[in-house]
Length: 268
Image 1 (cartoon, rainbow, N blue to C red):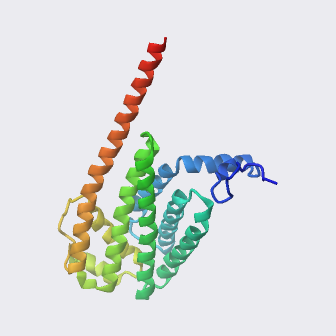
Image 2: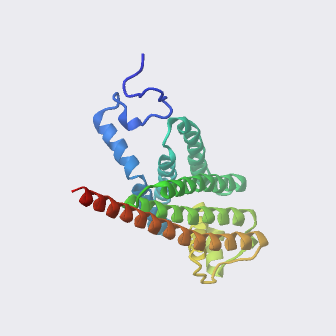
């Protein structure tokens, strides 16, 4: 006997969970709103982490825990933005649990280089996966909405955050791979938190992806220089392609609307 809420030929792995009749009404409405506004939620959380919490001085352990908690929320919401089918929910949830554990354990043991490195690379992998899936959703949308625009913005922020974590991983492996001002080097040497390293390279990443280039933090190793050059190229290509795609979608939608209106007037 087919369970109510499933169409013929539709499996539990591909059905829309917001249409499950066994789900309570308020939960179903919240799930539907979360899916519909997933890029809006992701963009708000990213802005809060990147431009408010992460740059703030870590004056207490509580503030550091709050910052790590918001980073954990970024990972969770990023995964939520990716999950559209139940068959991918389990592996993505497993990856998310591992990354969340790495974030907190690495913060508690900042002297463990291998653990810190795994934290940076694991978080970067999850956020990179999210950015690619978000871009795919934006490119495949039939029309431009506010959520589509915010999806493109969140993908841009995610790419910058991914590169920041890659730079932090490179610095962890080889501190001489970057030339930093003496004041910043002293803070990094005295800091007992991974958040300080991440904060420095978040700044460097956004300066690089926007091709602003103040020159206060410089990549000195071949790998770091190649990574920075790749980010700068990606930033320019992303802006050109994303803007062109959104404009093309808007023009196509406007032309279709005018054609539909003209056809309706001709019928009358």
